[in-house]
Image (cartoon, rainbow, N blue to C red; front, side, top):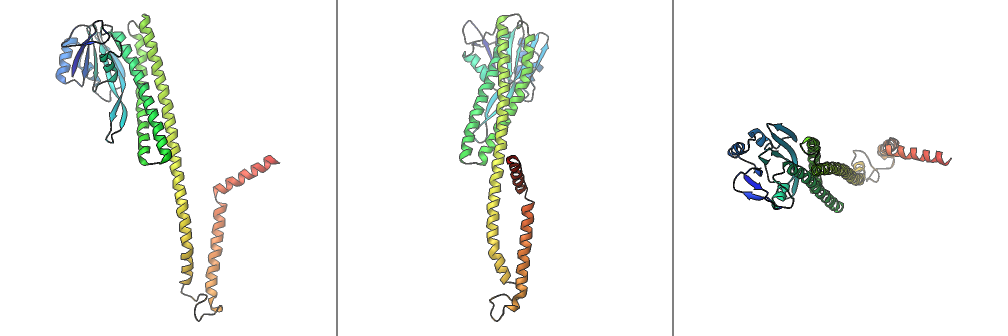
Length: 332
């Protein structure tokens, strides 16, 4: 899809039916024919126009025959199969020359929509100002989505305090993956932002210099915020992993106790089921039950020996003894 916009003194640019010098051309997933037409109108090569159509394209800059291209990653919200939101990034190219400004992306961009509706003031004739304004708004959009991720994280944590289910854990994992994507994209964008200082007019013109400083500040703030949220979420996931492990251990302890309780009647029934005379059997005197008592005695002795060995080898017991010794030394 191809749209032409031109600023005419008003805040919001007006859409045009055809190409005009000083206009802004917005390309959303353009076809090969549309790319060829734009190349003929603007003199920008098809390779430049199609660079941002690759979802794996890295953030970078390129200058060729009077054409300047800046590719950055932009945040994007997509609906997943479960009806929730997935946060990801997508490359977008801002290309300009003496004739016009061209933006290329596979999908619609919220920042460019703000330009079209007039929420952000732009002038299509001032190409560098357009570029810096887009970079600034894009960094702010990252911060906005990061705050959304943080709010969702807190909401999921509150739900997990009441009941811990696999659904909430998977949601936290998705948010953690989103933060990884954001962190990688923000670091790549920062390298592009650093090269903006070399653009003509940024160093000399005060208005451009102020915009450039704002871009750097917002970009670094987004990087720091993303790293903080990523670290917090990583620690949270580890903590919930420990909680799940402790819950599993508690369950195993309960099952072990139940097993021991069931083993007692099983053991007694086993003694009376042995193929030898047992006490209180009809026609059997106490002297004839000697082998029975021998088996019972050996069983008790072996059980006691194994129990003592297990208690002595228990690492928790050793730690408690060590703490008691340390406490006694301090008291002395």
